[in-house]
Length: 248
Length: 361
Image (tube, rainbow over all chains, first blue to last red):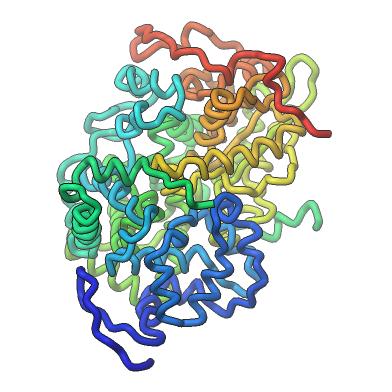
């Protein structure tokens, strides 16, 4: 460990110096499991679906992390790059040295959000939309998604059959499974309030609720910096739909 | 590599008494498949399986979108284990591939880093007062169907063959990435030669298509589909697979991951609309079935009772090849037989000679 400088980043205080970001990352078991000793063979990049589509090279990310240079790691934490991975984990079984770039990405994304750096990239800012859709749905309904969340208006790629299914959801789902949106067992049943309360309390005691609040707070500050009136629905919609086209 | 190399990755699958863990995506897009799985388990195989109304999402999609921290996900999964324990079960049958990968990963992480298990237990107890035992056996629901493939074959009403010619159907099997890429030992056949679906196809008379991009991701990529701005990633990866498999003229695809089944189906619609390209040999799309639907057809179940009307690429072409008798009008009936109208037509289901993907031979 080197000599540290105290730095304010808006969401808390942390220390900066050679290897400090690496130490913070090593607090995450996924980094400890995912980083062994990379020999830069590039097999991970060769099999990576994101590397085909984006300007993305997981080999370089692993190499940057094992280099432990704070400036380079901070640049990654603020970058578009760490948000390109699809977490398919195709890299994991192929690495001849037992590294898992996908795990390293998970640790980087978590730290980027804890430090508030995620709002410095277009792709990172999308975390707000993910939190307010999937995240909120887990807390409210007990499911990541339900049919009406996959609204045909914002999911045109789902096609006319899905549009038909959502428009007739009660009739169709009730034909195929008991208790659609009602109490009892079955697909897309209404999950009871006691259960929902347990899930919400789990989020509170395990850090999930605080993580959500941090995404909101960092997004709100960034939204104001960008000229929005805070992290409004308009800002969230912008993060959900905007693509600069500068990613491949 | 030897053809039988999948046998190096066999795993123990419990024979009976399962706690059922439903899937957010499968419930949404293929609710009839989960019903069909339970029907197969109870009626065809005579197994005991508990469908618990208190079971929730494992948070998997949120976890892999990096908005739900690992400790939170671990505590939610610990709650599922607690429900299983309280109900008197020790074998868990998981419908979702993302969940299956996550449950497997969590159990491995608890083994490797015991302090994470201690935290999960503490968080769960603080939040709910619940405690749990870890499952004795963890299986994806496709593992269980594979495990019983011979019993199902013995009850088969029909096979995966062209009823007119007797030729085996050409079937592309697609394995969800998180089935075995995270922990190859957790999947039948490992990550390179997964045999869980191929074993069903071969046992029930079909022919498995081998093609270059057989192991490529369907393109879900979590945030790369959920966020509208990122969906180019998703469709591009599905297209890569579709272009790779088309020259082999598959009659159908089958997937064990509900997300993969949905994406490979829906992106064919989008590609047909956007580029006027379809990938089936006859100018239409290639139907994508869940393995529950494939097993159900073999057992003689009605396609509309299984929810096959929810596919964007019409499945009638497979039904006709297999000689399945079905009522076309019943496709559009709701509960109690009420007609609910039909979806709008789509190019992917309409024959057009100039749309056939240029098959490179």
